Length: 288
Image (cartoon, rainbow, N blue to C red; front, side, top):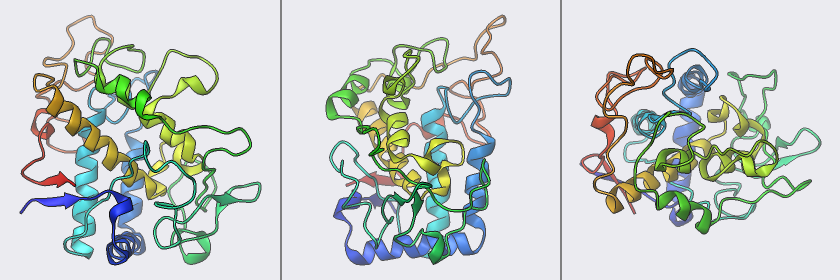
C-alpha cells in the first residue's frame, strides 16, 4: 500500500507525537546510532581514494532515497503507519515555529557551546550522541548563525537547480558547474565565504552544529531535510522525464573517477540496489 509523506507544518499533534516516539524508540534500542554510523562510513569526499556513493557523486540522490527508506521502515516497525515528514526550507524559514517546536525537534542551541536544551532530543531528556566525529555527546545547533547571520536557500536559488536539464555531468564530483545533482547537493566553485554552499549543503550550514559533518544524522532534522531533497528530485524528474540518472555507463579506463562512482546499473553499497531501481518511488510512497 502506498503511503504519504507530509509537510511537517501540516502534521497534527498526534502525528508529531507518533513520529517523535518512534525515533526515540529506535534510539533506546541502539538502532538509531547504526544509521549514524552508516552515514559516517559513507561520507567520502572528492579527495579520498575510496568509492563515493553518499556525497559529491551522482548517487547522492538515490543513496539518500534508499537510506531514508531504510530509516522509515525501521520507524514503521515501531509505529505502523508513521512516515518521515519533509521540511520545506524555502517556506518554513524561521528558527522558531515548525519544525523547531518543543513537541517535535526542539529549538536552537544555547550558551557558548550551542547545546540543544529544549524538546525531546535534548541531552537532559536522554538524547545522547554516541556516534560522533568529535567528543561531544550532546546535540548542537546554531540555527541561522545569529552571530553572523546566514540565510536558508531561497526559492530563486532552488529554481536554478530545478531548471537544469540533465541529471549530472563529468567529472561526476563536487567540482561540476552544471547538472541537477550538484545544483541541488550544493557544492560551488567559490573558495571562501558563505557562497561556498547552495541548497542542500546550505541547509546543513544553517542548522549548524551537529549537522555540519558526516555525523549529521545525530540530529533528527537530517531526515526531514532529506525527505524534502527527495521530494525535489521527484519534482525535477516529473518536469524532466528524459532526465535519467547519469552516468549510464562506468567511466572509461584512464578516468580518475573509474571505480569511484556508481553508474546507473551498478550496485550501490551498502545495499544490493542500483540507482536505476530507485529512480521511481510511486509504488512505495508519495508526497502530499
